[in-house]
Length: 475
Image (tube, rainbow, N blue to C red; front, side, top):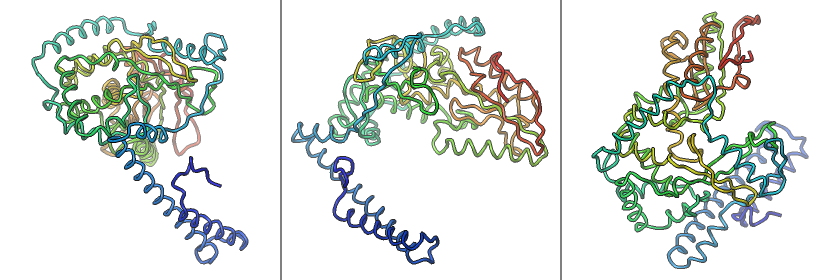
């Protein structure tokens, strides 16, 4: 018996195909579960299973198309039906955080759990002052930031790089929006923009051009709803440290961020110069698979050359949440992002606030002083700007590790950085570069969660005490 709420596309054709697939499977099991297409029962079962999946997929696609047509029609004539259909599309969440331990106090009520998360994240988003951090760089950045802010505010350009934001710019981004996504503080959902039609695109283009002209974003755009998501694995559900703070932002803000990102990638940032080719994170066509491929090929090649390979897998402490914003804006300016584009991104990350939403409770707003917001469209790009020079430095210090003429000493996936060397001393030199970079730009690598793995034809391991941030790295 299939619940119509969980599988609303289940029709007579799907049911018939499912029944046939079950019958063919029963025959195959009675036949002793033979393997191979030469067995008739196995062949019939596999064909029935394939037919069932195809019919199921077709029925689901047809249901989705009909549903979106109904929503589109209701948007123009029946607002109550429109919201009823939208609500029906929303996933039903039943995840509840039972208890949290913060500052040695166990919180069990929904309100206290919510406030405990808020206190934890407020501390997380407050810049730390570690003794190893470089104070001269701090003073230098504060001075440089004020000067850059003054120069960009006085810039006479009227628009973003590429000119005014047109209706076509807005509508093309709206077409890419995903449905059934959570909204921010303003309660505007993607469906509002998708089904609003040309008038919404026209009004938004006018509004966004005013935002660009004033070099100031609405205050609602600076506020986010922070939802703690459990990281999974063997982490303790009692610790707030085991939860990732995902920020729900205004849909209009994310649309604007997407337009800004497209303009920067089209008119300002050249793909030949940024990011470093060893960076596989947040890149179209690249990802975990390509980063792993570069890592493995480099290891295999050097082992074939009878070299030992030492690989350090580095863990950054709260990488996205502890980005030093003034340093980020300094790096963004040096990358070539200037004028109104710089001022707008700077304003998006000025006076930011957050409030935790969990267990159907909402905390009071707290100030968010550092980090890039996990949930923002620009966040991935901004983090790459922040970390790019480190990968450049690693590449410059180790030009001998790679595959023939291809240099590949530090394949990275956003904040997941690997350092590859053929000697323990060279690997330690790369770790020292990471330590110096993190101290200069005020973030930390976690030595205990990082590790070094040795690869070679020999089973004899090299005994070496690798360190990062004055912490020993297991290896």
